[in-house]
Image 1 (spheres, rainbow, N blue to C red):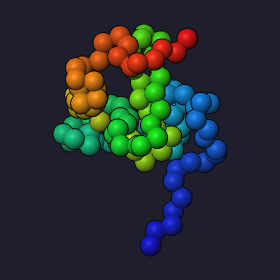
Image 2 (image 1 turned 90 degrees about the vertical axis):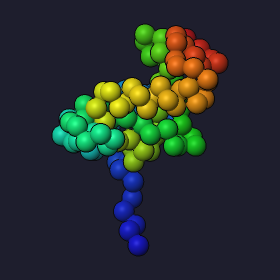
Image 3 (image 1 turned 60 degrees about the vertical axis):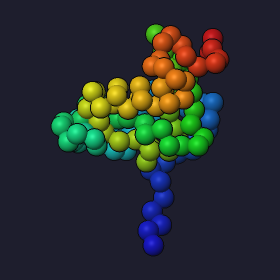
Length: 111
């Protein structure tokens, strides 16, 4: 049985870890997504994409007013090309909200 701990090198606390912090930690622990192939189509990846499976996922709004859903669990991120990443995000938002995201679709605002 593999008892390898998750790729968390230092404590991460909800409310203090931002979307940008998580992506910085992904680059530090897993490297650039461009070093991998897309998890869906096999083309060269460009971005780390959250898979949407964390029951404790976090939400924020980008500086441009778009929703950001992310997880503290770095194992829930996969390398993806931009096309597959956008398709997966839009599919997840439609499932939750019934339509693709507009500015901002979440029932809260962060100021």
